[in-house]
Amino acid sequence: MISRQKLVGWVLIVVSVAYIVYFLRLRLFEPGSAVEKKEWVQVIGSVVVFMLGTINVRMAAMRARRRTDLSHGTTPRART
Image (cartoon, rainbow, N blue to C red):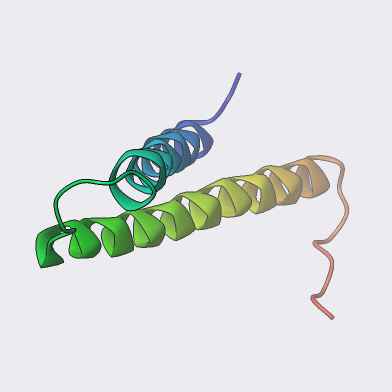
């Protein structure tokens, strides 16, 4: 079963990537009205959400790895 933290991370990643792709394809590369400041703020926000989603997925993987290490009776590895 996928953990809730990992699921939320993947949802954040998918939504932010979808918006960034939309922005690049339809707003930046197509001729039309000028891109407003509000839209640039939304793109920057999407990049931040993408980074948070990536952190969430990585933290969920670290938590799962730590749980399996503890359940097998080994001590967690020290970070190098």
